[in-house]
Image (cartoon, one colour):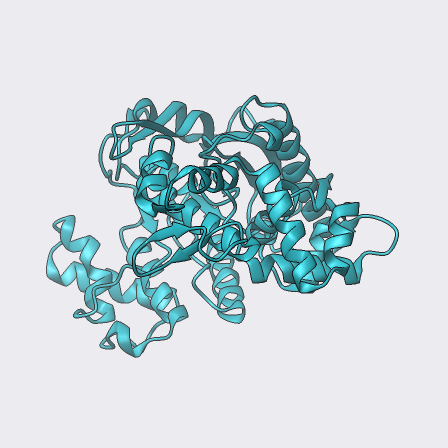
Length: 438
């Protein structure tokens, strides 16, 4: 990426690494070798799948958590705690329900030691700027989701930050509210109605990144690293129907899928054929997976299906689309390349099979392609009573994953395994067994 020499640096991320320790003491790498610089007068999007460490990076930049190594340099000073000049908008609104809109917005100013009269004046101005004039005395429970998020924006902007951080600020909103809030935020930015000199935001939406960002930083996961950067030359505001915009979206899809699949195939221990026990299975329910296969089967003619068009026709966010695509690739039911997805011969047979035939095909591919599935089945086969508590497998996964991620992966595996009838599961006792399967 080329940046004009006269552009001023807001912050730099240098050789950043973040690790956590599992309950068993295992070191788990969330972020590794992350380097990038943000400049004044730009909006930057951090784009990638869930679990790529984007939100963790955002909190490190905000000074809310510390890196394991490396550092964030903000205006020439290392960030080790929250600093003046950086404000953050969270996904879940983070409002105090017992305070009014005005009181919630005043919180940050109160923490800075601003006197009451000045607090009130600045808070009222921020509320008016973000379009909530008239709701100063309302409590959060009286507001819609979009209005609550506007309070979050007002609370961040009232401290006059030069850097605004946003962690998936629109993901909890309905489509219309989200579009309205994005438009208003861009209007504020373009009209320079705030003192903010840079905006950095996390998103899973390719269209959202393409619509708002001057630069898009694409993350890969396990651990989180920067895979690529794209500079967007089209001026703001952008038209989603414009051919240049659609090409940008296509390019991002192609970059994300092609680069990721190539990495997955080449890295030892991550290739589907060499998958480890603790591979982070995509968070996909069986009903979603079957519905996705049916949709692909009905839309596919003689060639690959364009992922951006598929996302639009199925009303799927990119993150959900990637997880479904990954699940089909794991099971060898589809291949993904250059932003397109194609059903394999196995996938076509699965799409046209009966309910029982689908179960048998799924079971065969699951035990063949997913080591955790085979491990669970082999363990139950070797037990004299053909039973084992889920904690046994959970503890094995915790050696490679965080506790939360281990629980998520096992939940997905149980859902897939029960559908395939390679084992049974009793929710109340937490016992996996061979009581039902033949």
